[in-house]
Amino acid sequence: MNRHLLAATDGSPNAHNSLKYIAGIYQDVPDIDVTLISVAEPLPSFLTTGSRSFQAEKSRLTRLDDINKQRQQECAGILERGRALLERNQFPADHIHTKAVVQSRSAVQDILSEARRGKYDALVVGRRGLGRLVSYFIGSVSYGLVQHLKNIAVWIIDDPIPSNHVLIAVDACESCLRVVDHASFALAGIKNVKVTLFNVIPKFRPFISREVSATFEDVETIIASYSEKKMENLLSGVHNIFRDAGFNPKSVEVKIKKGSAGVTQDIFAEYEKGGYGTLVTGRRGIGGWEAIFPGSVSNRLLHTHTKGAFWIVA
Image 1: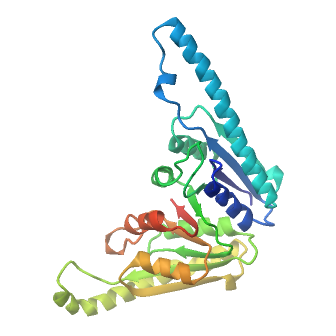
Image 2 (image 1 turned 30 degrees about the vertical axis):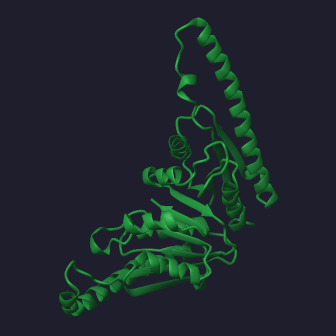
Image 3 (image 1 turned 180 degrees about the vertical axis):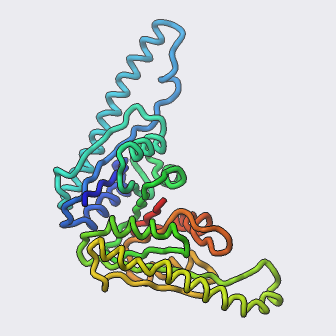
């Protein structure tokens, strides 16, 4: 079972944190490949637009050639530092590949193109970038990647937590099985990994006054019972998915929280108190009052989750 990750790096400390995370969770896992991609910042328009006079055009082309050589060297340096960091963290050298994009359109477009072409299992980015090349990794870049990338997970890393305890937040929809499938595939073979599947059943709160909503307690009880049963039925095959991926059944548990007034807050509370290092969610839910993933929840998690790793499965 070979897995291949695309890791975007701009040479910043946060980008290096994402590489440390990869090396940390996949320590002693032999079938992981990583391709590092570095994207040069797009050139200013005056260098890419032809000049009217021969002399001006000659000068522009000379300047453009010099800048492209410099950009190529900078990208190569960033990729080499990324490779060296992975190797220092015991990631096998023959499983590290590199790709520099100098003639760039935009960071989002270039990374999306490579992710689609290369058929990677996940795209890994740091939450914030500080380097000169593509120093805008998250928010605009990471947000753009999450919104436009299909059929591939995006892993956003910030301040890695040394923990192999993974929280998978799921809702009562069929798409949650894609989240579980990705997680079981990506986490297979990791020593001492522990997985908790976490479902939150929100309170039924129709858009009416508190006084009137008090009369809906019976309805809320019925809906909560229905949702819990639906979630249990949906997750009945989850242990088989993880078992088939080689997990010890004792390393996978399911938690259901009923009567939530704030789904995002409950997920964060569980994540923070449980000693997790990775949070996993889906990008889309089923809609209606039960649709706790996204737009609202996963988008909030995207913009507020700052500890450890956050995986978003499209």
